[in-house]
Length: 485
Image (cartoon, one colour):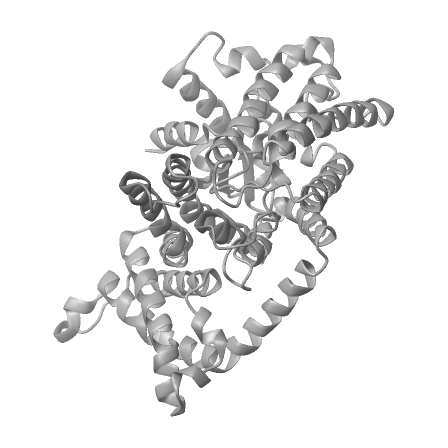
């Protein structure tokens, strides 16, 4: 089950990755016309509406992305089937169709059906489509129906399956919707404390990938909160809308890079060079783009107690930002790019105070992490036991090699450490991690893999392992693909 959920989390990253494009378009548009919201500038209106086309249709992107990511060989027909699934369920359960089925006026239909086109239903559509693809993509029909065999059969079976899903949701969705709304309202009524609770669990669930489910309640229009959509569309309340985003900026732009600095300063002298290469790159990624996985995975499993501290500090940051009504938003993550683009939006409220908060949290992260690492001798990167001379880090990482040569050498060592062709079953990647299936975990040489300088390794099952590489993981994955040909 955990493996399935982690694969779902990876699949969700594909549609979420389009959000930066929406953020750039809408951010520039609002920067041009911060008061008229596009009314006073055709160029601003063009950009704002272009970005809104992505935000408003995110459920469709979820349906397509999840279907593609969860299918066994990521074929385009699975993505088409995801779209088919979404169109079927959202049409059958639209307000007008439900009113016709119930023989009532549209105004009397349960308001839940007005929200049927949401991220949750998009994910369900994608999962059904992927399941149909994995089941029927190789099915051979009799000669008279041969045209519809294989991959052509998948959209048909998906449409049929969604008839059943729609029938179930006809009765279940109002109950689910009400439960989600009640949950969201219960948290939102807690104000700043609710934002803090959300921030804590958001970070705590990162290792499992379940944070995506939590995020969908607060960030998207699953329970009526839709914090990201409303913030960028300027349809919320100034100083309130964005409260589930703003507190991440001090952590991602300042807190985690400061934690990386603390881990560098506490690393063994003989390993400081290796630690520096990791933390400089990971810290810049966190500050500039808000991609924090390279930093978080660097100590998440090596010092889990330290990660819990990080989750607590994240919760406190969201609570503080919400308490003082400092708001900013993001389309992808809470980095400098999104901060600059969102700071001129109509609902941004004293966003630069988040930078002041960030400086304070940077100091807290640095001194608290440094104290805890030294006090409890935590084995963060650069403090591991063993002779550093045995690591061969520089040699394996490519020494002075640059570009493709560097990634090729890194990929070769990782692949050898995994057991090579005799042991590797499949290779995939998300934004920062290689996700691999092997035949025998005992044949995996983790020390050899770590010698490349990767931030960490995570064994997630008897035959599943993840290698945390960082934001350049795609280049390593491409080189491994060349080796496997």
